[in-house]
Each structure stands twice: as structure tokens, then as C-alpha cells.
Amino acid sequence: MKWFGTDWGAPVCRDEQHVPTPVGIGCYVCGKPIGAHDRGLVFPFHGEPTDPPELSTHLRCFGRSVGLDLPRPEHVPPRNEHER
Image (cartoon, rainbow, N blue to C red; front, side, top):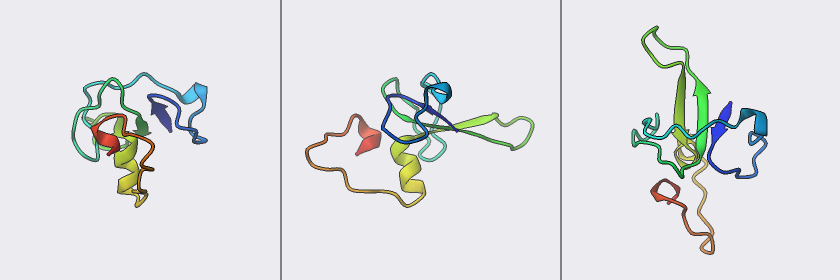
């Protein structure tokens, strides 16, 4: 699994798997474009031949999609609308 944005301290955040932020690509969870300052994950995708080989998602959207929508500590402001 690849990741983009700034390191959030997870084991996935290894330098060799860090990729440029896919600015403008739609998040596969919410559909909104990924912004220059977003953080998230890039997964391999094996669909139809015309489908993209990878899907990108905002970090917070991915967490919500797997039931990890943890409350944000009040002293940590959201970095952007996808981290609210």
C-alpha cells in the first residue's frame, strides 16, 4: 500500500512507499478531488481493463469506511475539510 501527504505516524508511512499526492483525482470513498495538502492512501485495483490500476482515498475517508471514525481531540484542528 502506498501513502501520500505528510506522515501520520502509522507503520504504512515508510519512505519507500511514499508517493506524490494525486491532486485532482477523485477519492474512491467520497468522490471529492484530492487536494495538494491532503493525506491518504493509494491501493492497487484490479477491475476491468479500462479501470485505473490504483485508487486513492483521503485518510479520514478510508478510516470512516472501515469503521475507524474516531473523534478528533479538540486541541488538534482539522488540516482540511476531509479531516473533520
